[in-house]
Length: 90
Image (cartoon, rainbow, N blue to C red; front, side, top):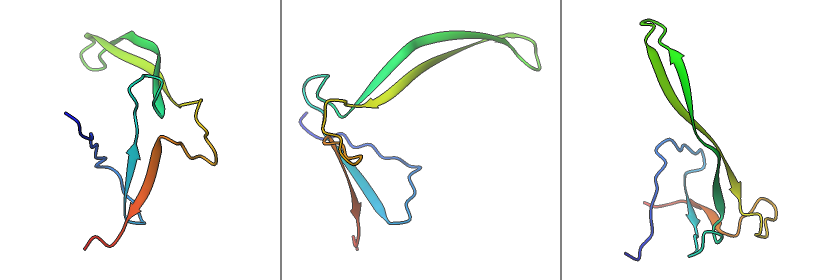
């Protein structure tokens, strides 16, 4: 399927109106604007329940999100993304 994936942030609130971001991801893993970098893939944490004193197990992960360091990142602009306002739709 040759189309675009659309993601909607239901918690986005703006005082200037509606906005959208267009991003590009190439065919290679290195041809992207941002990278997901997990450095602790999965860590198990054991605890005891406060009310029942039953053993509990939780899992957590730690990661970083970084911009592509090989792009010309001038004045906070990333060549893979563009952010634009939408006005006067009606």
